[in-house]
Length: 147
Image: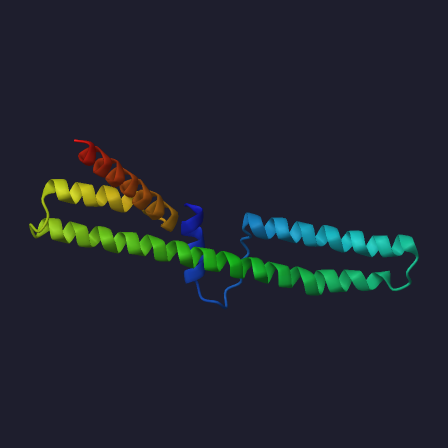
C-alpha cells in the first residue's frame, strides 16, 4: 500500500483509535527532540546545576508531544492539499470523458485536452505550460510578420 493510501486510511479511522504508526518525519522529529533533551539535561548536570533534572520532564512531557502534534498537523494539511489536487484532476478527467462520450469532443480534441490536463497537474506545471504557449505564440507572430 502506498504512503498516500496509508495516510488516507489513517485519516478515515475514528479519532478515538490510537495510531501506533509513525511516519518518517515523526521519527526524525522525535529523535531530534530526545537528543536535545538528553543533551540539555546532561549538559546542565555536567555544569553542576542542581535542577538539571527539570530538563527531562520538560523535554519528554512537554516539548516532545508538542513537536509530534505539530508534525501530524503539518502532514494532515499536506495530505488534504494533495487530495484536493487529485480530486480536481479526477473531476476534470470525468468531465472530459463525459463530453467525449456525448460526442461533444472529437478524439483529437479529447486527447489534446487530456494531455494538457495531465501536463498541468500542479500550479507550477500550469505556469510553465502557459509560458511555453506564450513563447510559441510570440515566435509564430514574429515568423508571420517576417513573411
